[in-house]
Length: 258
Image (cartoon, rainbow, N blue to C red; front, side):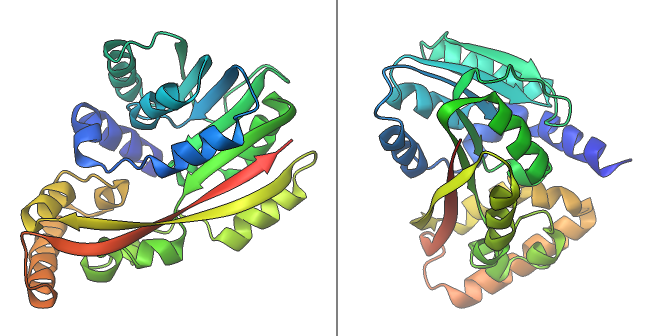
């Protein structure tokens, strides 16, 4: 089985529970809202949209938003459509496809977003296609985590081989360089976010066994279970209250302008 097929199958399996097992942060949406405050309406695309957890927030905070939701996984798009429709938002369309095959109309969009998904596709291809789709002074927002940020998470610190398994994340210097090399795009700012987190050990183990990060799909079933036991032992040793484990997660947004 190819790695691409493995990822497709992973997201197809968890599409129905994805929003429940992942953490969704509002802070990057508020940052985007403020950056687009000068626009009365926004026509945008979310690449790698998944089950729509960030798209619902976009609709809540961006007036007169029309959103093109793009994902390679049909199961995720079905969940997104149901989620947004039940939330009372109908001004969206879905496209099944990868960034390599995606054809967006030139100069048709005010903004392009991607949330925790850019490591699933080629960053430079994404920049070129998103850049061509932007109108003058349109903006791209890339929300992701770097390898360093990943290593500082509860998983990077305590889950066996988590950082060694996860080799897809881009370094910030790489992303900045690729933006600089892409014609007609300019990096406006890099915004870093640091979030206080708390969870029970049971919840963390449920997330890992549910493979809430696609990184966990790189573990074979027996390997994952063994790693969960080691993780539990490490967490019990380092935290006094396993009912309320506290740590910090970090992410970054690249704001890019055409």
